[in-house]
Length: 212
Length: 212
Figure 1: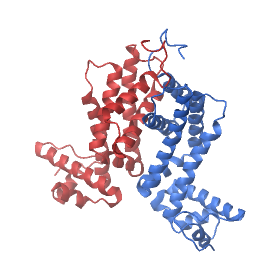
Figure 2: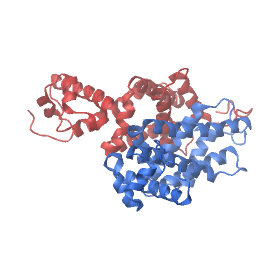
Figure 3: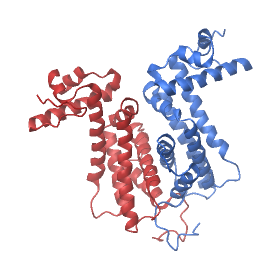
Figure 4: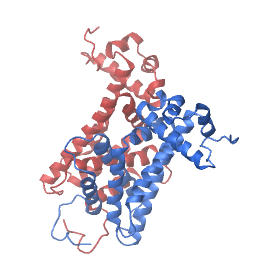
């Protein structure tokens, strides 16, 4: 057993250790997603993971610690979903559209992501804030590159990054978490949001069509 | 004492009753805002309100009931703040800008609004969803009127309303709740968001300037 206990998980040295860690995080996602932080228990997590209770403590010192690790893990999964949808040959608009579509599809498949991230506001406020700040940074990076390449206005920055993130989070809330019958699919939604981002809500006028 | 006890507050028949109800809701806002739902107590609310414990129960049957009433009350306050900033002579863009600026100023003064609304996701999910659905409806109504008047595209609807709401909520989170030194003020932020809404993030090109 590793003797250095930190707030975060010990990084396993073996493949087997990494698999156990993955099983614990997946079980934690189910348990926190279904029952919320307060009603979730370490023993329920280890039962779901089919891992001995003692083994849990070689990875995490507490329920709080695995919750924080789970928020980081899900935050990373959200970013990966977006990143994997983007290819180098995409222009700035296709990039934002693909990132949003991937996020909507991810949230549709992993509806618990909202509940877990949102509960972090109360259980692990630093993790909650860190999640959004790091996503905003990533979006700001993409927008900044697009502005440098002349694909977007050169006066955009952090404010626009938070606006884009908010748009994406709330489209996910409405169409992935609170989905109703006959909702548009993720591709259509991402295209609509993309149109707003690209040209705004002004009426299409004669001088507007092929302007860029 | 009124004999009809419902989940919502009994509507007071007298001015004095209305004042007591207001005192209880204001005290609940402080108590839930500072301590969160689980650690908040009815006796702490009545102490803050300087109202007898027995009186509380003539208005609300439980902590849960006053929490739900508070979410409705704050939801209404958010809407009022936006509504009061709008005048009939404003065009669609000035309307959205004024509504966002008013919201940012409201959230800056009442930072507890985020914590209380966000905690409703866990404590009173129907109130949480109702809050956002009713604000989205209101925004969709404004955008729809603007489209009819030819001020906005005629193909916008619910999706764009949720996008605008998400933008506004996350700008409030970043700049009202997580405000940092040297942040732009609410007027500047609302103008930036408005620019995104009106013309998107495309570079300003020759054919683009006075197109509408």
